[in-house]
Length: 78
Image (cartoon, rainbow, N blue to C red; front, side, top):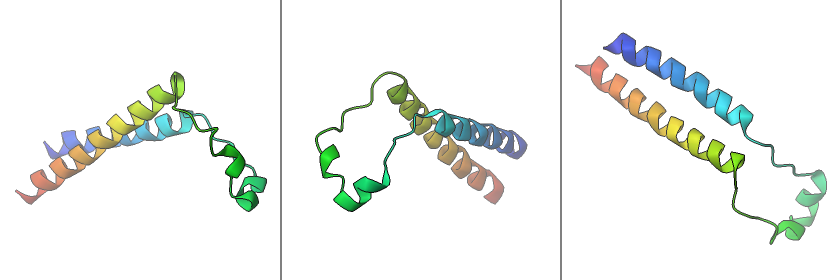
C-alpha cells in the first residue's frame, strides 16, 4: 500500500509541476512596483477560459497531493 501511495504522490507531483508551468504568466513590470500598481487597480478580472481551467486543475491536484501525503503518513505509522 505504501508503494502505491508513493507512486501516486510522485505522479501527482509531476502533474502539479506541469500544470503550474502551463499557466499563463501575469506580466508585471518594474514600474508597477514603484507606482504601487494603482493603474491596475480596476484592471483585475476573473480568469476565464484556459486560465480558469488551469487554476482549477492545480487546486485539485494540490488537494490530492496533500490527501495522499496524509494517507502515507497514516499508513507508515501503522
